[in-house]
Image (cartoon, rainbow, N blue to C red; front, side, top):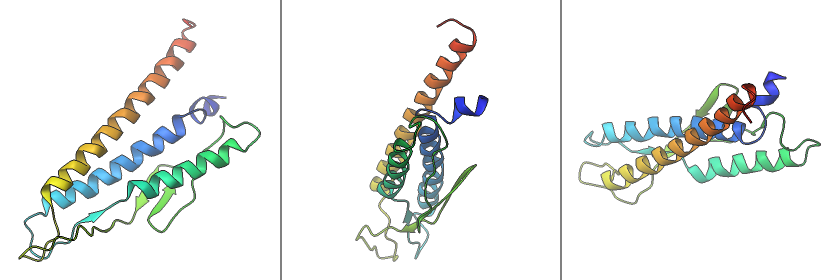
Length: 144
């Protein structure tokens, strides 16, 4: 019964989004920390690949007898391995087509933009999870 409360609706997708944002944040901050390291090649996680995997899992769940309940079964890809407690990712080399004199391919502005986008996606997902849990809290207190 209690599991059904947490694996229904949008909660599983939002949880996976927060997990992806966490892993991507680690990759982006690693890139920022190594901006001045000679011969460092920045890495990135493609949000489009994650979004495609998530959308495919949501579509598969919609074809089940109860489309809003049950675990969200995301298939692993070359880049992502989806585990019950999180996501293992293999960042790919960023090909920003900029190679500087120290053989780096970094771009601080672009990296900071990606970090800001990732932070906004994470905050939006967390806010939606907070709202979902607030509704559950109200239902438990019988205030609905």
